[in-house]
Amino acid sequence: MTSTVVRARGLTKRYGAFTAVEAVDLTLEENRIYGLLGRNGAGKTTIMQLLTGQLFPNAGELEVFGREPAEHADVLRRMCYIAEAQRYPDDFKPSHVFRSAPWFFEHWDAAFAERLVEDFRLPVNRRIKKLSRGQLSAVGVIVGLASRAPLTFFDEPYLGLDAVARHIFYDRLLEDYAEHPRTVVLSTHLIDEVANLLEHVILIDQGRILFDRDAEELRGSATTIAGPRAAVEAFVADRPVIGREGLGGLASVTIDGRLDQAARVHAAELGLELAPVSLQQLIVHMTGTDLRADASEKEVAA
Amino acid sequence: MQIAEQVENDIIEGVLREDEQIPSTNELAAFYRINPATALKGVNRLVDDGIVAKRRGIGMFVTPGARARLIERRRADFAAEYLRPLIIEAEKLGIDIDELAALLRAERIQS
Image (tube, rainbow over all chains, first blue to last red; front, side, top):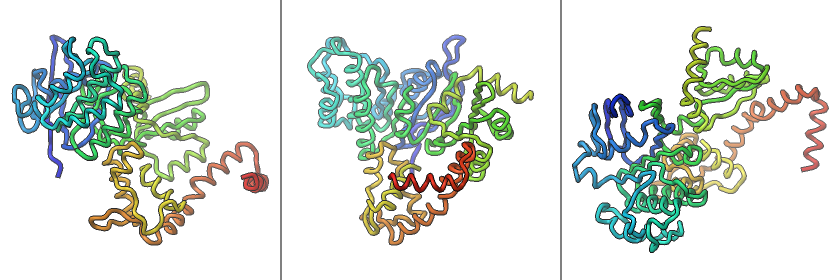
């Protein structure tokens, strides 16, 4: 049976008048890959810093591996957090980082780290401050993978990494996860790239959880219907609309929900085109806030 | 469920034969770059549909008669999935059924 790694209830973090994270309820199960997604400033990093004991919440309950994370070495030892702009002592070389990693991570696999160094073509004996942005990101990605921490966070880990390097990261993550299952939280803006890696998606907006759903359920859970405006509007009349665009007599409306075979046939007969909505498009629709809020208010009024 | 569909295609096309072992969930996940849990769900759907069956301690194998059953199911969906959109588009363009039939024949000769 799966066990729960993280349990948060009403987790709240304020900075003065600004509430970065508001009453977040969150559960992370063992050995799953989660996507923590949302716009810049949505609160993703704050949530991860709370979970890893780097910040103290103002309110709420938090248990990681059964207890509060802050200042509990047995909990912290089982976590690895790779920050977007991970910092190292300037005079360090990547080789120093990898040599000191086993002091912090009991499952550290030096041979795996070496393989990754070759995959990423990382110059291990160059000083950290002389590395390019992408090479610096590679250091973090290697630490995150080779540490095999039971709970690993990658917070926008690949600034400056090229497409080839990012795909090496995805491939190695999947391979190693298959052999050494662990809980991974991946926060990124490159949603389409990681969509298939995720088992579960948590979408954050303005410090709150917008949805927390199984990734497989999300795939194909929204549909865009395009065609003559009147026909489209009639078709979506009693369906939950999450996005609406139009051009002259044409409309393109995105609904939250699957269409069954009968509805698909009906749409085709009306001359409507159906298109699946990718996870990235779905999230753009869900978090492209103000415009959308106005549109749905108008719908309610109409 | 792309994974289930891919394995079904391989069975229909004869890439995977009956009584042959299909790749493991982890192999499928690595090859298609998807989460192993997602791959497992796909394989479980194939098990539920009777397309593959587990042999304890060895792996998943294509069941006897799986190909025929898959073809039968695809045939049942063929009209709704392919013909209906074709007819709707043809009507939009003013192509009548005889002309459509002639076009289909001509296209088949070419390919």
